[in-house]
Amino acid sequence: MQPKHRADKPIRLPRVRLPALAPERTTPFGWARFLVLAALAHGALLLVFTTIKIAVAVPTIIAIFEEFPAPAPAKSDLDPFRPLRDYEYAGGGRGGSGGSGSPLSVPAYSAAVLSLDAHRANQTIGEVIGIKVGDNFAGETRLEGAAGGLGAPFGGDGSSHFGAGTGFGGGTGFGQRTGPLRAQAIRQHKGAEPAERAVVAALRWLKEQQRPDGGWSHGPHRLGISALATLALLGHGETPDSEEFGATLTKAFQFLTATFNPNLNMYEHAIVTYALAEGYGMTRSPSLREPLEQRVALLLQAQQAPKADPLHTGGWRYSAGSNDADTSITGWCVQALIAARLAGVNVPQSAFDAASQFLWNMHHEATFGYERPGGTSSTTAIGVLSQMFLDHSDDPRLKETLDKLKPLQFDWDKTEAPLGMVVYQWYYLTQVFFHAGGAYWQNWNDQFRDALIQRQAEDGHWKLPAMSKEKEFNLPPVYSTALCALMLEVYYRYLPTYQRLAPAAGASR
Image (cartoon, rainbow, N blue to C red; front, side, top):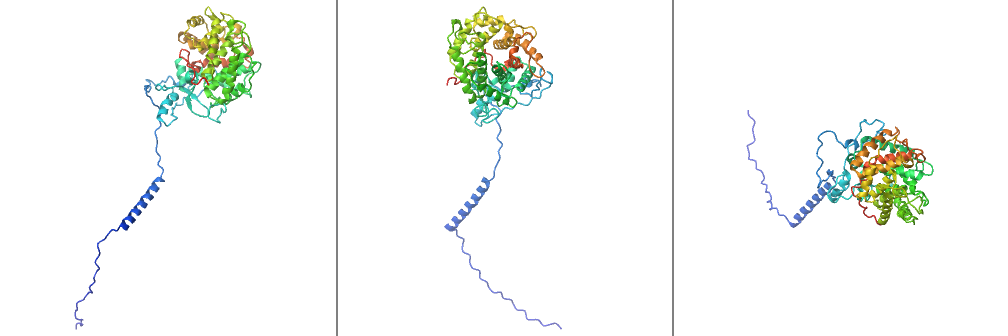
């Protein structure tokens, strides 16, 4: 029996009435709220981005060439500058402890522009890499010392940069003593790698011989011999900021400037003035300027002392008040005053004119005399060099005199000289022939360079040659070592006088 079911009834759902939605409207208040929120969101994003540091690699300017193209690649692996370009010196006599055939470790020479300004870089790059760039190139490389550095207070003006010096010829007198310019000068004037090694060996020996007070040697000529040693260091481009020889030069300047004695022998006074002039020209140290000017003033005063013989007017003698003159002392005074003027110290042209006239007074039959006209090879070499520095290289009298000196030979065992001053004569002859150039230089260079290299002791010093009688100046052998080093530095110490030397900018003050 089937169960009963309720009768099916329809299900009725209640009617739900949905409220009608009104069309959406945007009010001015709504827009303002939207804009405020958007601005806040953007501000937040900007704040986030500004806190993020982005590193940008800026390319370094290596060189700018406006008028001179970059050097062409070498045709072979042999770089003629390689043995001479800032190598690590081995030291030792006869070309170094490793021998003349030792390989050299040559670091790469990198040039850097020290200014972000492109125009300044254009002016500076030639100084750094030794290539003249356009007509605005005014000077060569000069290293100025850093304030408080190794050479303080003698190490420069504190600007700590490479800049155009105001030395010989507007900076070109000292700039070629360093870096690639030195390498270029050695190559151009027929130097040699063993000769450069010999120079550094000599400087290291001089460094070891320096006494605690900053001077060298002992005896009555100590100040002048110390100045010669200082000139040898400066001749290689060293300054009080140099890594190896900086402390040596700092002590040397302290010694040379410690006292001023107006009664000093004029030989020594002139050589000290010479060393201070080169030092100031290479560093621009204010600590050297006043002592240099003081000594220059004494030289000028001594030149003007009345002379008993009119032929001696314009020259110098042993003391500041001497009433006579000689070529030998005058030669050192001329070198000192030339270096001082071209380092920026005011020296009147009248002083140079008077010195030149005195030297011409000593000239006779293609020789320069000592106190009277006509003389020896030594005084003739002094007279020729002095007149070259005084801008008389083109005088026909010098050509005749050079021809008379040209046959002289450099023989370590046999060369004789007046009063036995053999090394002294060689020092002047080497400079004379270098500044004359051409066949004069080739003939002499082929002799003296190799002879000095071969005669250098293993520890770097030179003894006096066999016929020399300069022993009183040479205990220990600082005198001979300094002069021989200066001879081997002749390739880059000064520009040849046939490349005209112009007075420094700002020479008067």
